[in-house]
Image 1: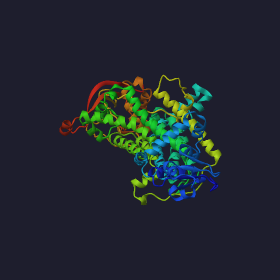
Image 2: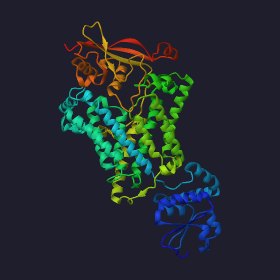
Image 3: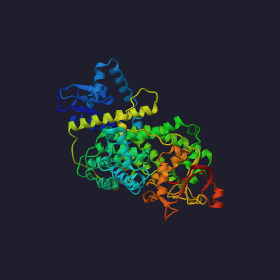
Image 4: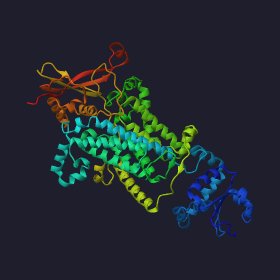
Length: 603
C-alpha cells in the first residue's frame, strides 16, 4: 500500500454499533497519534483491501503502507507494549488473541448489547470534574465538622485541666521513650504544650477548612489540614482513637495528591487530576467496605447466623429514636437486613472497579447503606465521609443522566497533562502507598500470612485497617455517675447524649461527636473502672469540680461546690416494646447490675 498520511489510519465498520462504541474509547486513548475513518467513506481509496476484510475486522494502515488487521491492529493502535511483546514473542498468544477477536467479531450484536448494558452509549474515557469538585467541598465540610466538634470539648478532654491532659501525656512519652518520641508521637503540640496551642490547632483547622471549601490552594490547604488533624489525634489519646478519625486522615492524605496544583479550584475551569490517586481513593473505599463485612463474618457467630440486628439498634453507642422503631421490626426482617448488609459490604465493593453502569449501581447501593445507618445511629462524620468517597464513582456523563443539564456546567480545561517528571513522582508515590495499604489489608484478611508488620507507618495513621462492629454486643450496660456529700443521698450527673433518663427519646447528635459519651459506652463494656485507665481521672475531675470537664455534661447536680464522694453504678438498659411505651411513655427500661466504681473521695 502506498503511504497516505504521516499518521497511521485505523479504518472501522461504521455500520457496527460495537465498533463505534469502542472506537470512541480508543480515540481517547490514542489522542492525535492515530487517525480514524469509517470504511464506508474511505474503502474506495484502498482498492487493494477487499471489502470483506473491512467488514470482518478493523484495518490499521501504517504510514509506510503496511496493513495490519484484527488483534494485531488493535494492539499496535493502542500502543500496548505488554500485549505487543506477548503477541510477537509469547508462543500461542497471537493465535489465541486472533481467535478471541474473530469470536467477538462473529457475535457483535451480543457484545454490542453487553457494552450498552455495562457502559451505556458512552464508552469513551470520561471525566470526573463535577464529582471531584463535590468531593473536595465535601471533604472541606467534613474537616470543618471534625474541627468544630472537637474544639468545643477539647479542653475538657485533653486540656491542662481536662481528663487526660495532653501536656502531661507528652511529658511522660518523652521521659519513657526519649528522642524517638517525636517520630512515634507526631504532633505540632511538641512546639508549645499549652491550652493555647490546642485552641490554635482547632482554630487553624476551621480556617483551613473554609479555605478548602472556597477552593483556594487545595493541595497546600489539604496538607495543612492533615497536619493539624494528625496533631490533634495524636495528643487526643483514647478520645480520638476512632476509625473515622484515621479514615479522615487517610482520605485527606490521598486527597493532597489528588487535588490540582492551582491557586483556586473552580467548578467550570478544570485541570487534570491524578488517575493513580483517584484509584487509590477508590481502593480506600473498597478496603473500608469489604473489611467491614469481612470482619463481621469472620469474627462473630451472631453475624454469621444473621441475628445481629436483633441487638444492634439498642446496643449501638448512641442510637436515634428511629433506631427504637427499627428495633421493633420482626426478626425475619432483621435477618433479611443482615443478608442485604453483607451483600452491600462484601459484593458491591467489587463494582467500584466495574464499568460505568455497574459502578453507578454500586455507588447507589453503598450510599443507601450509609443513609440507613445515619437514620438509626449517630456515627458523627463517618457516614458523610464514606458518601464523599462514593461520589468519586460517578463520572460527568452519569451526572448528566441523573441531573438536568442546567445543573451540569460545561467544563473548560486549563492545562495540558502534567510534566513527565511530576507524573513519574506521583506514580512512584501512588505505587508505594498502594503497596503499604495492600500489605496492611492482607494482614487483616490473612492473619497467618508472612507479611511485614509495617509498624513504622502507624504513627502517621494514613495506611489503616478498618472494620466496625466485628463483635456484636448483645447487651447494653450503662454507667450512671452519682455524687453525694453523706453517702446516703446520691445525685446523678446528667450526660448530654447517652441514654440515662428512661423517658427521654434517643437523640440526634451526628455529625457532632460527643467523645466523652462515646467513651462511656466503651467503658461500660469493660465491666469495671479497673479496666478503663482514663475513668479514675474523670472521677477525680468531678471531685475537684473542674469546669472544663463539667462543661462536657448537661447537668451538674452540685453547682455550688463539688461533692465529697462520687461513685459509678452499672445498669443494663433495654429498649421498651410498643405496648410499654404507649402505657408508660418510656423508651428505655433498666436493671441495676452493681457498682462500676465504688464511692471514692479526694481524701
